[in-house]
Length: 416
Length: 165
Image (cartoon, rainbow over all chains, first blue to last red; front, side):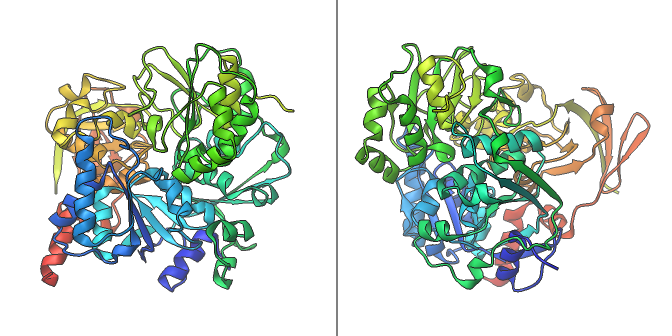
């Protein structure tokens, strides 16, 4: 019988055939810890009685949620992180290079077929290069640092097949939002998502990242894209035979198959205050807004900023709207500066911030208050996520967000 | 047979981790510091009302959202004996077990109870509410071992002590 991508990854890792529902112990290829949780990881690690990290080069520490510090106690996290890294010989520490989920693949820490865990739910992102990656808590992270292993339940797989050409005003973000709306916030709980079809094959790795990033919003354990030539180029590698084989077999068992025609997609938004509350932008048109946020590990990449710039070129944001743009990494920031994208955005009135999690996790850079409305390209619109619990958050693609910023109200981005 | 009785607090579907503890309080020093803000976006008064031994009964997908482990830790710190929900989000589920917070999955109880009702949990067997019994599906053995050790930290301590490192 054939296997799904996740079954192949776990099989290669454990050296035995596996089936959905089985509990197995995997050898971890890489772990990621971010600034919010490092103090907790550090104390649990020592409390457990460990004295060395199983393989310090496999651990990556990234400061992003608290960078730069916005509250007086934030720097304590950096200090504890620095001490922990020094004490246990961790060399992979990023102190202001960008958002963890961007850096893990951008800086080459994750390769196709790897098994990666991170102390953040959006760790599903690395499925964009065909890695099994998932979020865990800090206690489990501490135990991995000591043992190099973790138990998992082999998930069933939902196959999502998308074929055809997307309308020009539709982005990968619209696809994943539509899918989350169709599945519901728990529609993929404990399961793997596997994306296939020529629409997906024609997508950039950056677009695949946006989709894998949000898989957790349907409860998924991971989201996988079969590695191809684009993946190889992005990772700077030549695919091995084993990596090439990381596709879903024709006779693999899927618990569900969902098919979409790319031509049927329209721009959509996730409405307050659940990510699965998804509606076509056309149904929301006219609603006045106070702020637009373009950034995050979901949509802070160069292609996202360029898509926004394409709409904002020679135009200006509405006078009462604050447009906040946050590139996902320093590399993207520099590329966007070098190719003129930041210049276009700045001319249009954007407030461009340093690469970080920023507004997405509601700590810095544009917190909102009661009654305000924000159109944002990040991944969560939960109550209180970007300020008070009476802020309305609409999640959208960078194209939709940019169009709304110009109009000062929700509007469908135009097809040229 | 292990059993306990307590009062229930009733919550809805998709209670996310940002509701359980908003990000702005995550960098407070201890879980005790964070506990008063539990559930504050939804019910700011709730954290102050929960008493030792109370239970939370919720709808589907409890704990969805981020990987913040403070979510189950805070629920435990408030004195909640267990959370009974129609279903749990996966990271929250792992985090709760790792911190020794008991979770019970049951898809019927939520729609039968009202806030303030008393229920009795007979571990690994059933939940009793006003004469009706709701079955409990036992957890896999590896999770029972972690729960029995008192959480993952204790389980790892035991492992490391026995290996003498």
